[in-house]
Image (cartoon, rainbow, N blue to C red; front, side, top):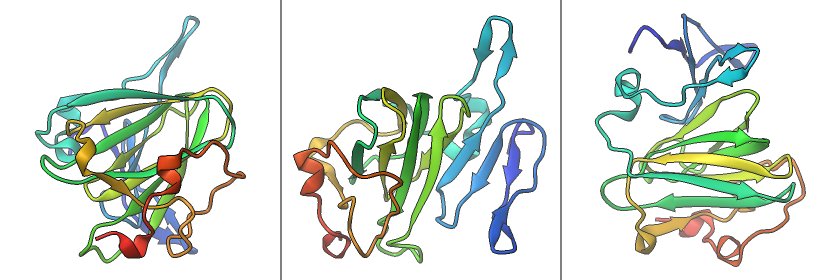
Length: 202
């Protein structure tokens, strides 16, 4: 991997994942294969700060030769709002890079891959504009989030075009999945309320 990255391997100390760091931005692995938190250090001066979110030459081992097919913004007004958990099936496979560019959210990836040893497990991380971190969601993992601050905005990079006929996901409060949401849920869409339970997801 390019020398600009600081790489965190999923080592464990006292039951808590730790990291071995090198110079530059850092990649923090989770217990779910392919779900990665990207941490960056912004360039800051008297004018404010500059933060690079994506450089193809530095992302070859994470993003591969996939195109960026979509760039989307999700603006969320109310604290406690939940969106998800969403997944797009089909080809080309979906990979997403999610970054909070305003406010704070609790961001969640859930493994729905049929043959995965971690199917039915989830990983959550707080994303914030101040921290400048991102979550990489690999193919076969659903994504959702809860708004921790009013007027929070997420930026998505997608490796696949939008295919509404191949959208699916898993219900946010599925007891088998057991996602720990930090706040009481508000403003769920009807679509998200009707997503299938894990046991019904192929």
